[in-house]
Image (cartoon, rainbow over all chains, first blue to last red):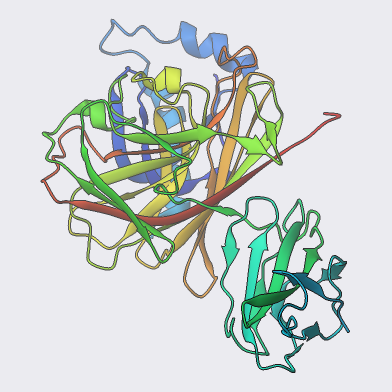
Length: 78
Length: 343
């Protein structure tokens, strides 16, 4: 099962005006959490995801990313 | 004791040029002094009319002299900066239509890489060119170190924010980036440093966001052609809270804090690439509120050795922010850039 890592030392709060992964522009105050996808897991992640399938990725794979991000957020949340 | 030059002839009809000596100063000589308070002790035995002027040798600009008509004139010698400074001091005694002059040079040595003084941004000093595609600037003023830009009315538009859409039509001032007299280009490895201090004393008149940095296409209306890197700030309508930080092309990464007074930023570029800008947001008591950086993610800007400019670009914070006629933008800012070899 592929993994992701979080650069917890680089987690910051700020106002970011930039471009989202879907191409839309965002302008938001928020917590910036750098997610690291190891090169060794990159192809596994992409293979497990079909953007045209509404149930993709699997719940188990989704939790890997979700839990990593949320664990990071818990550490910085007031 | 100084020596004397006589202007207007020597003795004529029994009259002689007035006496004049300046303690520890000789006519035509050069001296090295330190920056800060300077004063002279003048001996004026004939009670002539005295005048002391101090000018920068580089450009002739005047240094304010206190007590310029007295026997103890004083002034503040500026920092030598990176290049050093030479001041031309002229003391003149005039009586009976005759003058005696003692003129000399005082040099303030370079401070090297320590305590480098930044160049104040005065958008009215004649060195900046305004590019204002939609005629949004009503007037520009400068006083007490602060620029005040008064706006014409503007409807909300994504073209007034570099961070919204691909175009930018906000007004921008620019000038060639000269580093100790050498023109910087897109190939020059350099660090651009700026200090930006927005004025929030009365609250922002509109949702405003502004940009300070370098560009090789400062007049372009396409954000990624401007390809700027540096810093900026944002103040929302009615707010006195400064959001400030890094700017790279169409991205800003700011931190917001009600106690931030100014931002100190450094942005690399060179080798036809944009580097990463980093910043410290600082309170009035010199405590740092935030620090951060932003990767430009642009390793090729296509400048091919084009001249670089300093750019000050003004706009709105969002694409839905309008500007009323008479709204103002106020800030003090200064910058300097240094280039490197052997990298």
